[in-house]
Length: 335
Ligand code: TRP
Image (tube, rainbow, N blue to C red; front, side, top):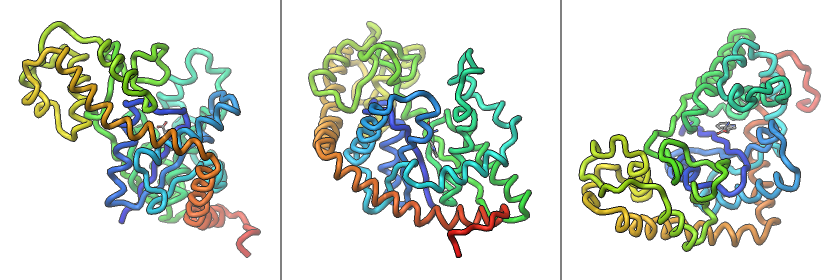
């Protein structure tokens, strides 16, 4: 079986967009892959994090992942900071990656914004740490959103340069699994913008912790147009809000836009929003309830993460120790 690795930032309770875009795909992959799932707190501090909030958000993300069906006994779930192999390998990769490569990273430019002089050095070398996350496990399949594609290309460039410089065939090529636009959920207020936790309006998103009334209200207020739903996909052209609601329905029922329109074409939004609300509530309520239950016992969550870290380290430590040997470090621990 090919080894899968993916990471998610501990940014608190995820939105429906995060769920359909990433988490749900992780859950599905568990059936036929060996998976390693990492909550990336080292990446989180590349921008300022209030320590108490970081701690809380890390627990929240862990609880949500488990509530969504992540199987921490069959697979591995852990915190990046708990396995030192990540930071050790990242340092070596800092010395492999070229400044010219990092200068091309569009996410750094976006996140650093205008005040680039004041961005952290960590934000700049973020992709090297991400490469280390994956290569520390010799993972070959990495499910990510399209915004991470460039980082995976960089991870492959680092592996190739390392193999070439040290004359070895040690780090394998990574095969990106780019999660498709079908899972792309847009803002409820503007169908051309991604649903995002950082949007100032909470009405623009559905959070996995929202209760039934909140979900109903947000969907009722979601922006739409006056036309009824078309019967064919072509009729969604230039109707981003309609497309978004149909897309959410399709994703939650594991079908596509065409199938939803076959069933609901001709319906007005009053009717369609009601069935959509029922659907979203039926899928999200159990997750919200289970998340809340898990968060009542932080010690148990931490115990789960501790077991995950030990199992992760068992895989990563020998790979990173071998990397250090290849580089020429004498390596005291191993003798
Ligand atoms: N950078 C990724 C994101 O923001 C998260 C991440 C960190 C990751 N390390 C990873 C994803 C390794 C895949 C593999 O989405």
